[in-house]
Length: 184
Image (cartoon, rainbow, N blue to C red; front, top):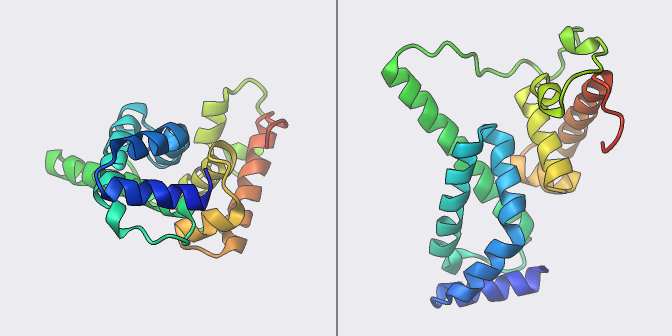
């Protein structure tokens, strides 16, 4: 779907046309799910957020400004909703008791070798991805699964493109050390 067709669908949705929403859903459901899953790393929560995402798109159709790049627009909404879900989860954990998980991200310039530096040939791709820092995993998911360009990722995350490419290269280096040479 190109920008022009997407804008037409958004205009039609703002006028109550559900077929336009169905067209956007069919075109982007899998891609947006992968963006959300890349942030949440939980299938059930990603499914819930993805469903809510299309309600949000429907409700905000009249606010869409044509010519702003619809893929970045959609990815930003998906990512923000996933981050909101993470924040909600943290509040729930806080209310239930102290959070034992450390969700803080280490400095991206930290190059100290860790367990990911060793070559491990028998890891599943999911296990290999779990060895990445959350920021690296997010960039890999957006680049590989969502097929976004580095510029689209940069715009969506609100970080310099150099940081995006640095995180991607660091992640790929770690994945290759786990025996994943193909597809990256």
